[in-house]
Length: 186
Image (cartoon, rainbow, N blue to C red; front, side, top):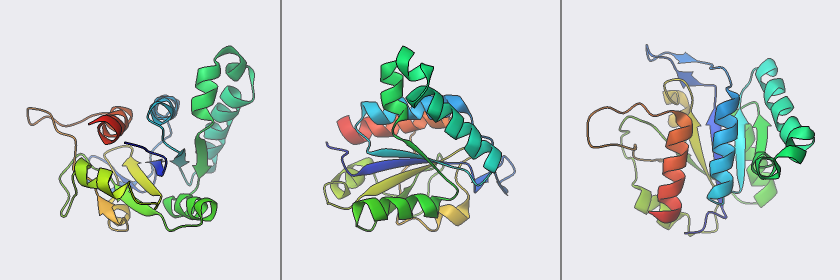
């Protein structure tokens, strides 16, 4: 399965807190590193870190620069290659618009969630849709997941990753890796 039209977005606003209230979450550099590495491994075309907070966006840009233009990239070329996929955007809408401008095509937006979403599609259905020429972007939520206001704007909703029991609280970087593996190999 090719992912030559797949993008990923890590959303820091709007996301939910444990009380199911919309919030903004703090950027963690380990999420950036791990999702970039998974994106590169599975052939994702680009990875957007979405945060409206200037200090968080600056931190993201500093991390990216260290590994792509600084000594980090010299010491670890494979990390450089992965982090070159990352772009920072203030909003999900901005990320989508930038992809549409680059691809000159409408983007299909796909929400992910740890909880079941009404009308969610299976990985198999998403794989079929990815065979079209349309670029797709998978939105992953930090904190306790994407806020309903963002999920409601997405074209598609993807079924959650589940295990054999009822426990379901993966880190976002683990969920991104599992989804990307299932999309490309499953």
